Image 1 (cartoon, helix red, strand yellow):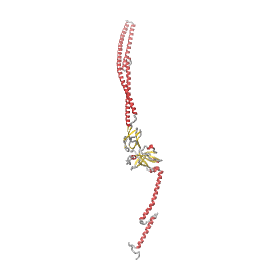
Image 2 (image 1 turned 135 degrees about the vertical axis):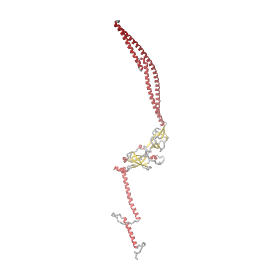
Image 3 (image 1 turned 45 degrees about the vertical axis):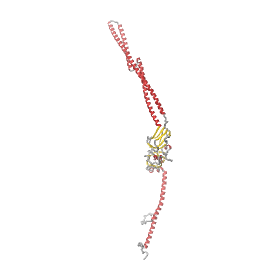
Image 4 (image 1 turned 30 degrees about the horizontal axis):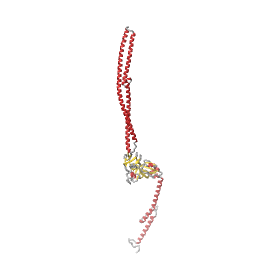
Length: 473
């Protein structure tokens, strides 16, 4: 029996099993050589792949990672350097936000219009107040009362003039009443005298008329006798001459009667023409003078009375002012929150001194520093997004003001100092659309925790940088 024909454990001849092992090891070595070769550019060959051992694949993976990681790191460093160079050379294109921003608010100064001593503080630090609320009280017992004294002197002087004018008015009124009584008496006597004179003249007139009538009868009889030849013409002419004399006397008496009647009628109308009405005329003139003086005194009394009422009103207002200034309540003219008290109770202050400072938490501001090259994009009304330290959600706002620089006088209008500024930078003051949400105070009574004043923030423009690039292109 030959060795090749000897069966093995699995039923195959021993020579065949040895040859199969050699073929298997040669196939494995050829597969390993094929995997280490680079892939061919022509069509791949159809061959049967045998799985490589696990240790060989792990070594191949580590070998590839050691070649890829340095290359990716170099690409990242190069991209970062390019980004930094572009950001430095074109800041308006890539810089659209500022982290040098702080929450701030306009400060309201509560001052006192008078000097005195602060008597009380009605509101504590950190408390909110509304318009009309009393904040502090100031007492000043040495308030200037010169105006009150002057007004009181004017009132006394006016009262004296009023009393003098009133006394004179009463005297003139009494004199006018006496004059009216005398006028009535003299006027009655004058009217009686006028009536008696008129009656006498009328009697004379009647007598003269009767004489004229008798003489006319004589003339007519003499004319008849002349025509009969009993008397001469001279006798008749003598009777006619006597008639003319009587007629002229009658006409004179008639004229005197008319004059007396007109004088009496004029006296009744208070027009005094005759010497009989001399006393009545004097009394009437005195009556007119007293009436005019009384009218003037009444007007003067009315004026003095009105002036006295106005002075009394001014005195009342001045007394109220002195009382109010002596115990002055300092009231709020706007809403806000007390940040700090500069003049506690017991402090003596001068007129115009600041008692406390407050801010309005309902109108927060954010002061940010931006490059000057972004001035065209930071016009008032531009929308911005604000992220405040300690606030989870971003807040919307608008640009309210742009300041090329902020001197001490401008910064004094705000409670928190502005961040430092460098060359070619400007200040942006943004106004939030809504008040800040309630924040937990880091320390009780800390001024920086109230209204979130002093918290750092980040202000970003709503326009992205690639939109700005499109506008530049």
